[in-house]
Image (cartoon, rainbow, N blue to C red; front, side, top):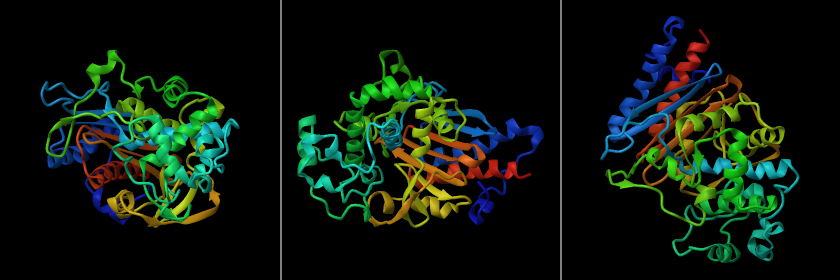
Length: 383
């Protein structure tokens, strides 16, 4: 990531020397993270960085205020909507292996939805938040799979497909359900039994096993109330993954080509970086969001703001779709009521970062902290 005008101002005090790389890296990360923790009273954070092909992990604070148990490399965090990138990858895998076409409608695979308004919607629309106006959250009275099917059958769009981006959990959940149906298994079984093992993610869970529960951090709401994710019929596909910093950093490594993977899995991961729509400086991939490098901090903050995630925005279709690019910054935020996550990487530079916090943190604060660190690393690389 090259320095933009914003990056030059932010990174002025964060310059490496080759001789003290490790110590300076520790300092750069601490200088970016500790002020955010202090400002928002975040009990604990974990950071993962990929630089020069090497992974560096950092832990700060506590996983639980009550027990004072420190955050470690084993600490599990809820990653919220970063979970959607796994749903997108499963759909991409189904496409790569010929089990589905992303241009098909959901009813092609879930026949109970045939004849509904979803017949006009493609799987690409579901994975790019452009089907026509799903709400951010599923209505609270949807408690069973039967309820969910009835909800999708009765859905009425507010916009034509492919015109307006409305960030939503239900539509991405539907993408995951279709992918699972095309592959002939339950979504959770496919992710935990196929996708995660294929990626070498050994401490990433949709259901936290008993042996790992002691590593599961306590989350905290904005006012400091302890909380963890509740159950929901769409949680697995939309926001249900828990993982640690090492595994989430490995997920970044997979996305920038640093891992030796099964060919179909590798192609599926890369294909999720295809660009389908433009919204300002942001290109909407299959769940992932990308920006041409160098990118200004102001563009990243706006692209991850509530203006984009909580309101409808007109988009411009990219025809033909933009093939996966290397000279871009790709990112995704995620949050639950008590956890916040940010993931960003630059494939061309084999550079990436993950931030995990056990409290609600504004996206601008996460993005800015990560940008400061990435800018410092990029500055070192150009020396």
